[in-house]
Image (cartoon, rainbow, N blue to C red; front, side, top):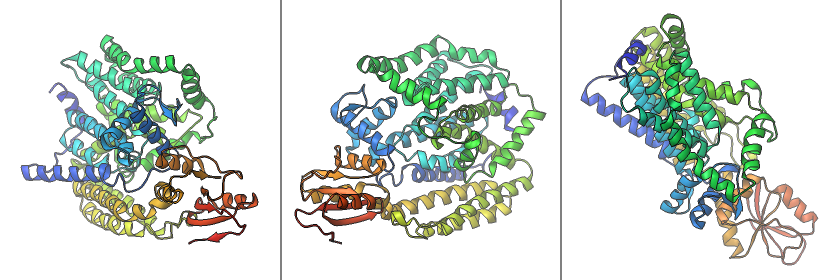
Length: 550
C-alpha cells in the first residue's frame, strides 16, 4: 500500500484485534449491532422536539410537496437562514417514506453512517485494523453522535461533509505516492461544496484550515497546494455555486439574510443571544466524547510521544489532530456559541481516541488496566446521573423516571470494570459500547414513548385536531418550540387566539396563557393538561366559569 510507510511509522505498536475468522465474525456482529441501535433504532419513538426540528422538517415537507427545490419555504414564505442540502435530503425522505419523523431525521442518521465508513477507511489505511474497529465502536456510541445523529438538523450533515473532505485530503497530503490524484482532488472539492450547501462558507474555512494547518505541521505544505488545483476548484464550483446563484436570483434578500445576518453577524456579534465564554467548547467536546473521555489521557500521552520522540513529518496523528483543533479554535472565537458548532471536531477526535487505545493494547498492561478502569468509571458516573436525576415537574417527569436505564448501564459499568481491571482493554471497549447501545434501546422502547406527550407536540396536536373536528386550532402564549411543533403536526400555521374568536374555539396554551384568556373574558373547558407549558382548552359558547373535563 502507498500509505504503508506512514502507517507503520505512526501506529506506535498497534496490536491486532484478536485474529481468526471466528473473532472477525464476532467483531462484525458487534459493530453492526452497536451501529444499528445507536443510529437507527427508535428514530420515531418520540416526536420532533424544540424549535429547530419541526421547523426544518416543515420546510423539507413543503419542498417535497410543492416542488420548489431552490427556495426553502416555511408556510409559503422564503426561509433563508440555512442553505439547501438538509432540505433536499429530507424532502427525498418525505417522498420515499411520506410524512413522519423518519424522513425528517434521515439526513442526520445517514450522515453519521457515512462519516463512520469514511473515517473507518482512513483509520484502517493509516493505522490498521484495530484502530478501525475501535473507531467503529467509539464513534456511534459517543454522546455527541447519539444526540445529533438522531436530530432533524443540518449539524451532522455538515460534520459528515468535512469528514469526507478529510478522507479525500489525507492520502494526498500524507502518502508518498498516490494514484489517480485528480480523483482525490475532485472528491475534496465535492466534499467542501456539499459542506457549503449544508451550512455555508464555514465549510471552506474549516476544511481549508484543517488541510493547511495539518500540512504545515507535518511538513507537507507543498502537497496541500494540490488540493486547490483545477479538479478541486472545478468540482467545488459545480457542486456549490449553482444553487447559490439561483437562490440569489430568485431571492435578492438572500445575501443580506443568509450571508450577512446568519454568518458574518452571527460570528462577530452576539446578535442571536448565544454568548458563552471562550473556553466553552472544551467541556462540550469532553462531554460529547463520553463515555470515552478516559481515552483522552492516552491520546494526550500519545500526542506527547509524537511531539517529542517521533518526527512530525508525515504523521497522520498530527494531521488528524489539526481537524480537531481548527473547528474548536474557529468557533471559540465566535460571539455565538451552540453545542452543535463543535460537532465537526468529533469524528477526527474519536479516531485519535481509537488509535490511542489501539496503541495502548500493545504496550504497558498497567496503562491498559488504567484506561479500562477509567472507561468503566465513566459508565459508572453516567449510571449515577440516571439514579439521582431530578424530576421535571413542569413537564410531568417524575423523579427517578430514568432510573430503569441505570440497570443496564450499571451492569455494563460493573462488567467493564471487571475486565478492565484485568487489562482486557478490547473487551472493555466492546462491553462499554454494547452497554451504551442497550441502554439506548431500553430508552427507545420504554421511556421515550411515555415522555413523548411531554416533550413533543405530536400527541397534543392529534388531540387538538380531533377536538376541533375540522375547525381551526388556535394557540395562545406558547413558546416558539411548541408553536413550530404544532404547525408541523397540524400541517398549517396556527393562528393566535384573540378575544374576537368565536365560542367553542380549540386553543392550545399554557397556565399563564389560560389565566390571560380568562382575564380577557373567555370561559374555558380544560380538555387536557400536558404540562405547565401546554394545556388544551376549548372556549365555552356561553357562561363565564372555568370547567374541567378531566
